[in-house]
Image (cartoon, helix red, strand yellow):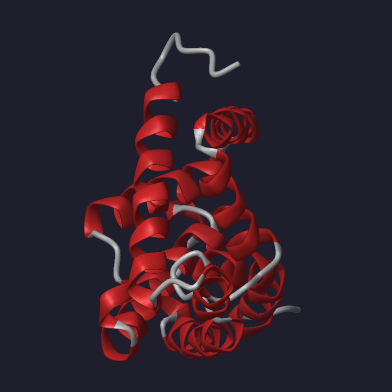
Length: 177
């Protein structure tokens, strides 16, 4: 018979990849994101008795804790990189919603793709370098001869525009295509 600890370990192993990806959306460097994931895992373990599947998915619960750990890390180590709480909350809402309903998630993905296409070519390149190619902010800044704060601000503005665009496209009756 499996106990709460076994269930926790299985749920965490399934959620580990998505949690790391989520953390990387806040903490740009992979090494730092992995450290935040470890802190998140410790907190999740300590609070494992508080988790109840009836209140939501394990990933949604984990993302809530991961968000707090990631923002705490960024405040301590990279205060200039914190984007507004409003944007962060919107990203959380989208992330949690995506775990609840596959059709909703597909609409969000469609909306995101549509919104990315509306960005300028240089904004698309910046996103691609950071999220697909996994380049750090400092690497992108060095490639373009820009300061770190300039690249952080640029990514913040792009995220903000994407968040607003996705939110508009997710309104009832709107088809992002």
